Length: 431
Image 1 (tube, rainbow, N blue to C red):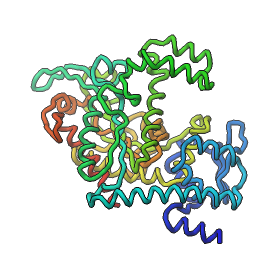
Image 2: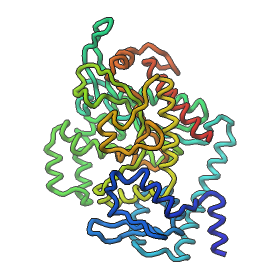
Image 3: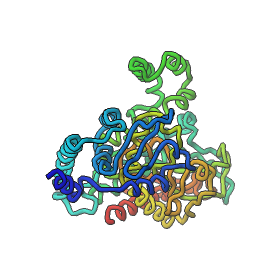
Image 4: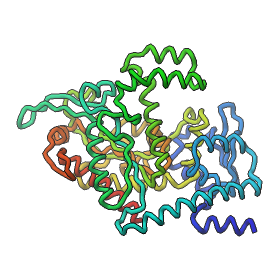
C-alpha cells in the first residue's frame, strides 16, 4: 500500500523521481567548480553523502529519499530544513518517516494547486496564475549615494559632441523593473519587487537612514543571539558608512532580498543588473567592449559548504531541477537580449571572473556563479547582465531619456532590455 501511495505522489507531479546518476550529472555540470568539492560530496551506488571539514560524513540522501528531500528543500523554510538536516544526519529514513514527510508535502502542494487553479480561472492571459519576483540590482539612484556602492560611471564622452556621462546602475535597474513589471502584468502575471522605490534598500528605507537608525538595533540583536561576537560588534560599530557597507551591509541586505523573495514563493525570479568592462575600472572613460550574459546558481567551492544553510542551498540545487529550469530561462533571456540589443553573447574568456569563478553552461552566454542571490533564492531564476554601461555607444544611449513606454520616460535601451526579459519569460512558461 505504501508503495502505491509513493507512486501516486510521483504520478501527480508532487514528487519527482531522480536517480543518483542524474544528481551526479548535475553536480559535475553546474556545481563543482574546478573539482573543488570532490572530497566534500561523495556519490556511492545508492546514496549521496555530505562530508564535513573533518572528513566525516554528516548527512546522507539515499536514492529512494531524493523525491521527498528535494520537495522538502523547495517547499519549506530554511529553519525547517536545518531541523531536518540535523535530525536525519546519515541515518536512512524509515518508511514511517517518509510517509509523514510525504503527507506534509501533499497537504502543502494541494493547497498551492488550488490557489493556482483559482488564479487561472480568472483570465486566459498567458502569464495568469504565475508569480514573478523582480530584483532591481543595487539601490542608489544618484551619484552621491552610489559612491558607497561604487556602482556608477562618470566621464566625458568625445563623440560627435562632447558630453558628460553620468549613470547609476541602481537607477537603471529600477527603471527596468518598473517597465518589466508593467509588461508582465499586462500578460496576467502577479509581480513583486524586492525594493519598491528608487534609492531604497530591501528594508524599504535608504541606506543612509538604515545606517543611522537601524544599524545599532540590528547589531544588538545579532550579538544577543550569538550571530556575531563582541569583537565583531565593536568593529562594525566603529566603521564609517562606506566601510560598513562593504564589510557588513552589502551581504546582509542581499540575504534580506532573497528572504523577501522566498516569502513570496515566486514561480521564477528575474535579477536585473547592468554590467561594465572589468578592465576599464574606475570607469572614468568609455570602453569598446560590450557583451550580454546571464548567471544561474552553482560553481561552489569547498569553503562555500562551511555553514549548514549553505549546504542546504547546495543540496536544493543538487537534488531538484531548479538549476536546469534556470538554465532554460537564462538561455531564452540571453538570446533575446542579444537579438533585441544587437550585442555579442559573452564567452568564458571575455571576462576574468567567468573563467575564474564561473562554469560555462551548455548554452552560450549562461554561466553558473555562486552569488548570494543565485544561491539563496528558492525558485528558477535568471541573473541578467544585459549590457556594458561604460561602452562608448551604450553610455551615450543610456544617458538620454528619449523614449516613453508604459508611462515612463526612459532611455530606449531600457525598453528593449525589459522587452527581452518579457520574451524570455513567455518562452519559458510556454515550454
